[in-house]
Image 1 (spheres, rainbow, N blue to C red):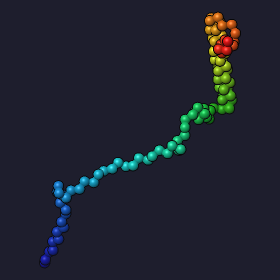
Image 2: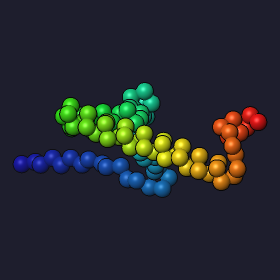
Image 3: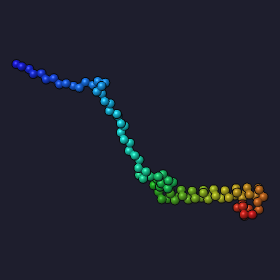
Image 4: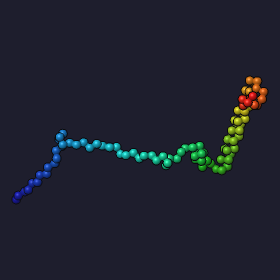
Length: 98
């Protein structure tokens, strides 16, 4: 009975035959500027409007309109009151025409 022994050689890593393979991070996907949706007031309004009924949206729009109109009227009243305090008699003087 003869037994055959086979020997396999494994490479030995030494300082002279070691070659480092640099590890690279996985590539990051580049953002496509055209695929991003710009966040504008219209986009935000449509997001919130989609969660309301037509009647709720109409009511909110009406309230916003009257508040904006009140803001403009109050700005005009404050401007007129301030102009009277400075002794300006005509509207043309407010514009700097006179």
